[in-house]
Each structure stands twice: as C-alpha cells, then as structure tokens.
Image 1 (cartoon, helix red, strand yellow):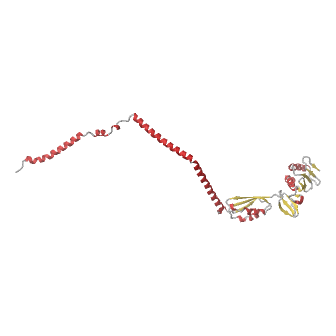
Image 2: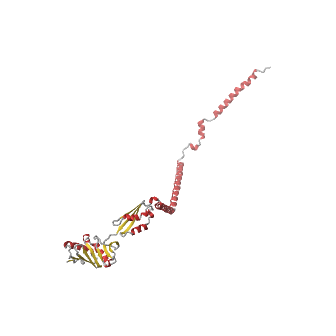
Image 3: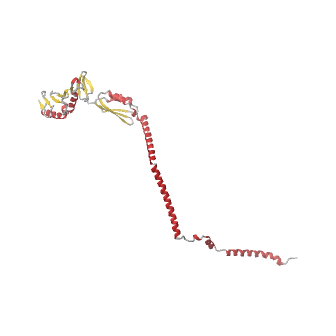
Length: 318
C-alpha cells in the first residue's frame, strides 16, 4: 500500500524550514549586538578619553623636576668624588712621574754613552793642532797618531800631555772634541822676551823665566838680561821683565841690554848709540815709559846721552 502523499512530502519541507529558522536566529543575534564604533568606545578606559587636570600636570612636572635634580645631584657628587680622589692622589701621580722621568733619563744616558763610547761612528779620524807659530804642528800630530780610531770619549789625555811636554815652547793647551770624528788640540805658545847668559850659552826665556831654547849665539830680536848669575831666580829678574814689558814698542826695539843688579837698580842700554837709561825700580813704569819716549823725541840718543827717569816728576838728561 502506498503511503499518503502528505507523509512523503513532509521530510522535503523540513529542510527549507530548518534553514530559514537558522537564518532568522543569526539575524536576531546580529541585531542584538551593538555597532562596531559603540564597541570601540566601550573598550577605551574612561581615564584615557579625558585630559589630565592642572593639578595632575603640576604633580607630574614636579616629579620630573625632582628626578632631574636627583640626576644632577648624583653627577655633581660623582664629580666631587673624582676631584677629591685626584687631589688626594696627586702626590702619588707626581711621584710616579718623577720615578718614570728618572728612569727615562737614566736609560737615555746609558744609550747615549753606549753609542758615544762603543759606536765606530764616534771614532777619531782627524787630529788637528792649532795655535802654533814657533812649534812644528806636524811633529805633534805624528805623536798623537796612536789616538786615531779610538772613540772620542776614550781619547788618552795622558798621551797628549806627554807629546806636548816635549815642546818647551808650549805654555798651555786645551783639547776640543768635535763629533763625530774630529779632535782639535789648541796650544798656547810661550812668548820669548829676552836672553839670559849662562854657562851653556844664551838661554831664550819667557816672562816667567822658562827656558825656551839655548843657543851658542844671541839673536838681535831680543835683549840680553844681565842679572846676578844669569838666573831667572835673581832678585833683579822680575824688575827687568816688568820694565821691558812696560816700554812702548818704539823704545823696546832699541833696547839691546837690561842691567838689573837689584830690584831697585835697573839700567837700559840702547843699541847703536849706546845711550843709557837710568830706570831705578819697576814702580811707575808706565809713567816712566811715557816720559822716556818724550825725552828721546826732543833729545835724540847719542853715545854720551844719559836719560835718568828714576824720578819721573824730575827727569834729567845729560
């Protein structure tokens, strides 16, 4: 038997009816939900939607200023602590600087000495003797040839002294080192002034009485000193030398002999004419020299002339 037609169609009508119910329920749910803008406004807290009051702003500003002042105070405190630390440790820093400076100076000096003493760059390659007129400089340079190749600081001054001691005409000397390789010996020669007659011959001496050379004959360039025993230790020797050095060149060139029996009795003998000058002592020699030059100009010397300037205030010519 067939079922009635209304029973077969019932299931077909239930499916669309169920779909319509679901759609209506969804719409009802959407209708009950508030709009998106309203939901967003409800999500924002009330305190963010309102501006802070003046009291709140002042409070925030005071808090910010307090934090800023705290930071400045901390920085100032740290700076003060650093200054105090530097002040209390200044002597330690000075001590360290001093110690390092001393160490550096010692190291530099050691290096300088090492380079100067042991370096071949500072070895002597040239030796020069200067200031010689009467002495043969080449003879001294040959004597000092043993110092070639030695470092300048290690030059043997004893060898130089011994070489110069062989030259009686040398009065004094000095050594000059010119880096990197030059050695200069500056000598001061003795100045011969007169002759002394001795048993060995004529001894040429300087103002100190040091014998420069002894010859059998006497050169005319220097006068003869006639003193007791022909010795530089005689009493009349210093007076004769003082008188001779006080004479002007125009008069000194005419003196051929100086007789000095004592320190108060000095007599000059002029060459050519043989005139005599009674000098007396060596006192007031400069004034006596001026007076004698004037007398010889007005009263030319002759074989019988005698100039007495022993008392320069009252001179006598006879």
